[in-house]
Length: 71
Image (tube, rainbow, N blue to C red; front, side, top):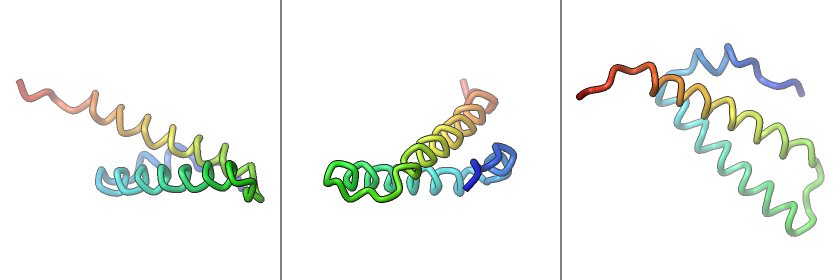
């Protein structure tokens, strides 16, 4: 499975972005748990999930920085 393109992540709305971040964090938790109990059958999913979470968090931070500050 190829890495998701960053352009696809940028098309998400803010609510979808937050939802996907939560889903990735849950998935990473489950993968860490499986790795600790030696039940992880597809170790490549761990790296893919971390990469996807990093992309999502990067886009979220870009949006926060570009939003006008309310001061």
